[in-house]
Image (cartoon, rainbow, N blue to C red; front, side):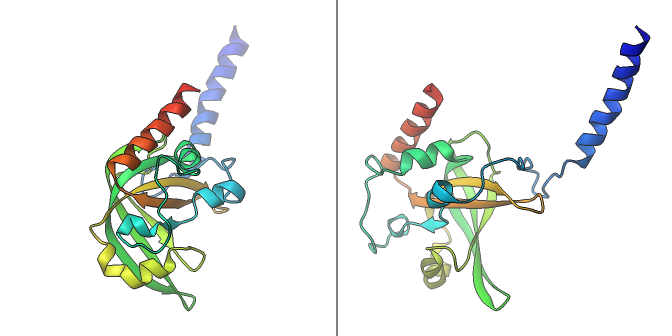
Length: 188
């Protein structure tokens, strides 16, 4: 009897010490599991930090109907969150002599995902992003536009996280296709 009490009395402080060492990001979002998916391969292709040109009213590439988009289902099911968002700010900065942008979003409606990133979040668009040209040339015109965005957090070596995304057109058809993909994932 005494040994089980002693074990229980030692377990509680150990658990509290472990919790105290768990990093909590400054934005209040849950910390990323260090064993979570790594940003490479199919996940890097799905969350490619791209803003589709049709999403912001440009006709630069071939439009893919959300109902027939071969990547939509995989993106929706792998996302931490899928949401209709409004672009609230686009901020350019120079880091190590290279121009990059911070694009901030405000969630208008959550369409899916089990790990929300908050009502307001920011992503980075840099030289590795296929959207750098669009963001650079339309910096001021992007603010206020609404898009549907797929977001996933990936762990960094320092214990923090990077949000990677893919933005597509905000339309009733896209929202319906996303909801269908999310429902199919929940039924599995």
